[in-house]
Image (cartoon, rainbow, N blue to C red; front, side):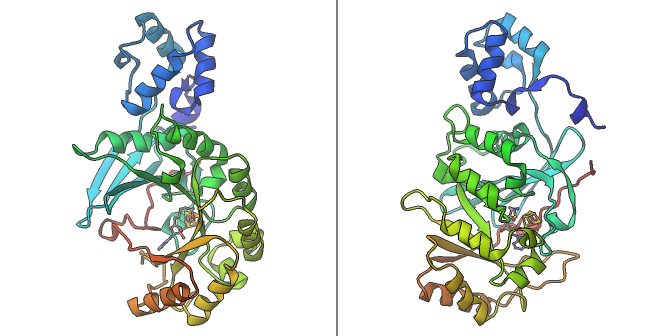
Length: 351
Ligand code: SAH
Ligand code: SF4
């Protein structure tokens, strides 16, 4: 058993505002103190109670007896020539996760992990091939933002956050939901829901729940194939939630006005990149308010797939555009430092 399971005191970064208020009320203190503490934890990145100078000494002492403030160990930072930065973080139990900061067109997007490893086993993904250790806590999800925001250069500010790092966010629903609430809150990181994107392998019940519960994020769905046969070969989860059911669920989602679902499609040479695939994609997406992100496969050691030639990628895009779908080729950033999609591995120690 790692330290993770032994830690007795509550980690304040795992709590919602309401839970923190209840904890403070339980100590016999004013509820509004919870808001002050939240600002310290996220806005100012406090790592100890001593720093919270506008709280009475007595409250700080009381808090340090009943609660703790987690933080991630910064193990490494690498910069790619294209400006992408990759951070390797150590969790308290020795597992490691990665986050990637991507400067693009005046935006600064942070891609964060939601699990140590991933249990979904998609065949084209290095994270998936490495297996699953455990879910991240809400605090561990948020701490990636705290650490990266704290290390920004003067004048830089995070503008967007994407849940597209290691792990399947909807397989860790409750913790991800908690973390998203704080990301979007003014007491946390104040990112509006349009600036947060959650990418999923396609867990249908949880996708429906996201919308039913008004979780503050936009939705991206990793489609990656146009037939059930190819999709279930690439993504084992498609046996449980078939392509047709996934598309039907997407079609029925109560999308806010003017909002679209993003479908991600990793293009793999000879597997899902034919003209027939492109035309089929235009058919199966009919009636869904959406856009498409094409991601040319990032080659990784140990995975035998190949990236299609650029002209094939452009032809695929053209077919979709001509059918009226906004289609973006997601230039893979950070390839030089293995920070691109599907190249995040971290190091997991098993559970
Ligand atoms: N588990 C979630 C989010 C993390 S994966 C999901 O699957 O959506 C983020 C994106 O990276 C997904 O769209 C996935 O299809 C893509 N991806 C994984 N491996 C890749 C690779 N080797 N090359 C390109 N994209 C990859
Ligand atoms: Fe997990 Fe997403 Fe990788 Fe599939 S693509 S193995 S769901 S991280």
